[in-house]
Amino acid sequence: MLPARHYVSEHTQFIRELKEKRPQIEEQQRVSRAIWWDKLPKDLAQEKAMDRDRVAQAPYVYSGDVLPQRLEDVKPPPDSPDRV
Image (cartoon, rainbow, N blue to C red; front, side, top):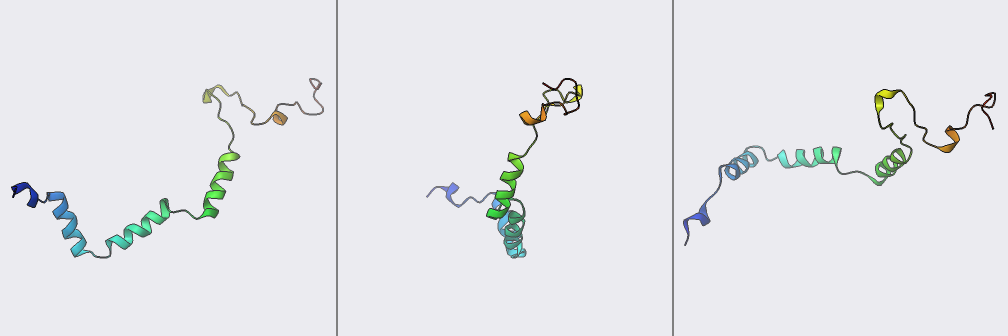
């Protein structure tokens, strides 16, 4: 038998000892994961709506030029002399 088969890295030893000392750590990991990653369909639908309604950013943010999101935003106000 090769001697490397029984090798256990320091990292693996550390993790095993940590889980023995703190058995609740896996449940804490599940709870923490749920905060950031496990999303309900309602949350995903809300996120999709936010992405859809996002306003486009100007290519050069410091120029002061504002890019409209929709064509309706381009039209001048009704009392403007530029109105066609």
